[in-house]
Amino acid sequence: KYRKMAPTTKLGLLERLALNLGVVYRYHAAQFPRRKELLKNILLRELKPPTLAELPAIKRDFQALEKALQSQAYRNLTVKEALVYTAVFVEVICWFFVGEIIGRRNHTGYLVPSNYVSKKTRAEHAAIDPRDSNILPPVTPKYAKYE
Image 1 (cartoon, rainbow, N blue to C red):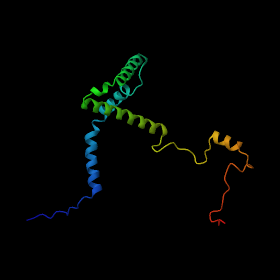
Image 2: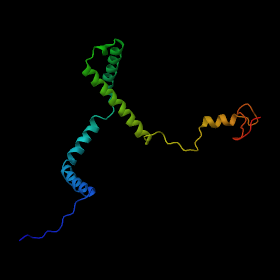
Image 3: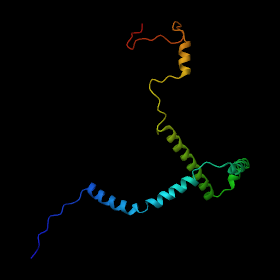
Image 4: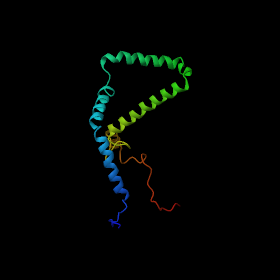
């Protein structure tokens, strides 16, 4: 009466993840051209440097900001306005740090070769007379007995 079926096996975590990622990819694949065009428009309009025609307006805005800081107009801001201005300031600072990381091509610091010596240090070292005993204190052995 009952038909025997092959035993089913439970899918592992990676197998389930692979199946679900395929579904997500197929869902979003249709959106790729639209998102690419949107990103292109954002890059062309929002991240371009200012034109020469926009420079006077930028100068006026900075002068207005300076005047507002001198007259302490920021004391009259509502909490909501202050939070918006703070968020914009934090965003500008974050973009600055992202630009620094991109410029360095490293997120921890500038990559400097271990054998690098600057020109200034080389010149200072060349000017030192090795017979001058006042430059460096005498080196004592690590386990020297002091008498």
